[in-house]
Amino acid sequence: MTPLVLTLAAIVSIPAGVPGGVVAVPVPADVVAVHFNDDAALLYRHHALVGLPLDTTPGRYHITARDGHGSTAQVPFDIAHKDYPEQRLTIANPRHVNPAPEDLRRIERESARMRDAYALMTPSAGNFHPFARPVAGAVTGTFGRRRILNGEARSPHRGLDIAAATGTPVVAPAPGRVAVTGNFFFNGNTVLLDHGDGLVSLYCHLHEIQVQEGDHMARGAALGTVGATGRATGPHLHWTVALRGVMIDPVGLTETLARLNAPADDAGGASARAQ
Ligand SMILES: [Zn+2]
Image (cartoon, rainbow, N blue to C red; front, top):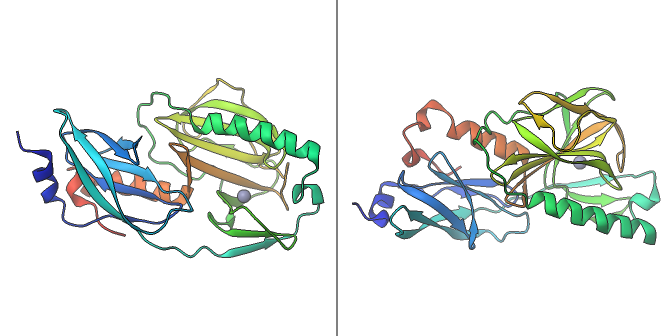
């Protein structure tokens, strides 16, 4: 048996990610578990997929890879700096910028419900690719923008906004189970899909919800329609994706999954490159 640390020598380039992105760290084929900061990361096609929180400090980091014999090794990756632009929005309902006390109680309840959903860890067949956009339309709000609402700084935008006409169907990007449906203070009519293995996705501001909690969705099945419910300046889909509880740029996840499923990567982990 070749020690894990020696098989790692075959990996020459150090992969790189950005805060708010997902990094794919190649690991040898005999690796059975990967961890980052003591949290189990997703092992996918001989890579550790790690979601990087928006507030992560750039620098050199490591995952821990473990093989079937219990040997472990540290595998490095870099987090590069990324400048996220500022977005200024005017919100018509002032309570959507400075919520009233009763709103805050509702927001706290809804946040707790969402935290539980983001922490879901259910089995999956790993059928994540292609993780296509759930609705066609222009991107009007990219992930990570620092938001100024009615002149006041608010939390960064942890999703992708896609503009489309009210009533446009929104479809599941990958198979999943409907874990949450409801009307939320900021997010409006919302559906949360659990794709398994700690990958969940969220669809907000829907005009209509067409599924129920517990429904199993095939890739491409409609879950609702585009609307402007909750805190929205016009009809659009707000799409959030979280991996192991970390909200990441959906575009980055889609692209990473596509790269790892490209024919050139079928041989395994040695072909990853910094990007
Ligand atoms: Zn949004």
